[in-house]
Image (cartoon, rainbow, N blue to C red; front, side, top):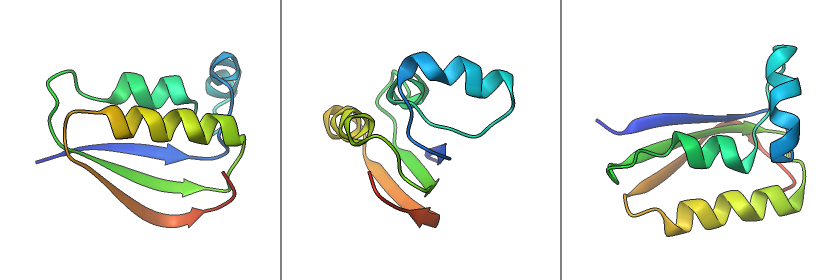
Length: 83
């Protein structure tokens, strides 16, 4: 069974993730996605419900997923907007 990783809320810079987490606000940074990827290269499913955000963060996430050695499936569960 693949690992499911949620990509929720706006796409934000890595150094903003801690503040969003502290206040219990949904947000996704490139670092949070990269750290959630299994080290063993097993399959993952990315569940997306995001209103977008910074294009540079979206590009970083895309690159991390493209370079990941396992199979990546993306499911849009709500919205996949902007970035």
